[in-house]
Length: 341
Ligand SMILES: NC(=O)c1ccc[n+]([C@@H]2O[C@H](COP(=O)([O-])OP(=O)(O)OC[C@H]3O[C@@H](n4cnc5c(N)ncnc54)[C@H](O)[C@@H]3O)[C@@H](O)[C@H]2O)c1
Ligand SMILES: [Zn+2]
Ligand SMILES: [Zn+2]
Image (cartoon, rainbow, N blue to C red; front, side, top):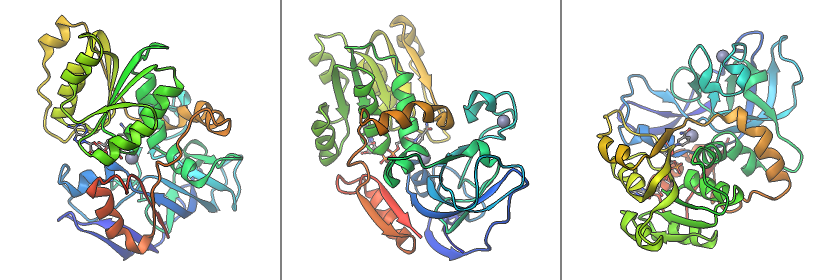
């Protein structure tokens, strides 16, 4: 099968690899129909994490079950499914909460070496009952792809930002994750919405969603726009020292900073005294993907959560190198790229 691979020099190519075998009696093999590129895939290219062996990448996939183990219940060959980007064993007390991060075996993410990459023709899915969701009625392919990761991330970021209904929020970073967080914050009742990104065309997308936007660093402008107070809640969807500092500075005293941007391996020099003196709550979150589905699916089906326009670009899997270059450019035109095998 063809798969997108990143080698140790950070080069992307499509190569032929052996097809996956069924990963145990509770697993399934999914024939991928669409897989998307996430900002998290770009960390490999940016050299944030060392790569020892070439990695088959990607963790956002929608497809059809082509093989299924005897212990999988409620699914059959031919079912159209979406696959959670974060996997758990599916059988422990942690997984019983539907948050794969709590799995006692440690959560695993597709496409980081331990599990196969989703940007491929076939994907082996262990503990299929836990990882899979049949694509629900009325959910588009793009919405299904967002449910595997970015919308779950943005939704969890907004919920864990404790935005008071009628309150104020700032979203820092306006890639697909930031846009999902922005739309989630609005659905959750934020009244005053600020959005921050260096790329003007990305800010314009947020303005079209009702946000007042600034280029970073934004804290001073956000303070001025809130009578010197700062905002109730800040979401970081970037994960760099500069963006986290900006988030902390933009929050009001007693406010909440909710971080979902993925930092590199270096420690973040946290301004602990300032955070203490201003009684900030700071939360870090990996998307509790499976846990978000019962909330997000009905909201999408009812049209109460809008994710239109987040997917901008469709390419064939063979064009993955170009697709990554587009995602890496962080332009306004290419906000979110999907690859079709
Ligand atoms: N926590 C999770 O579970 C989870 C899940 C998915 C993605 N992520 C992470 O979320 C982040 C965003 O992902 P994405 O797919 O939207 O990526 P992206 O690269 O498209 O978006 C990042 C955005 O941040 C902007 N940016 C850069 N520096 C900035 C600054 N100082 N201030 C404000 N904006 C700045 C960029 O212009 C870009 O628009 C990545 O770090 C990704 O790894 C986390
Ligand atoms: Zn991701
Ligand atoms: Zn588990």
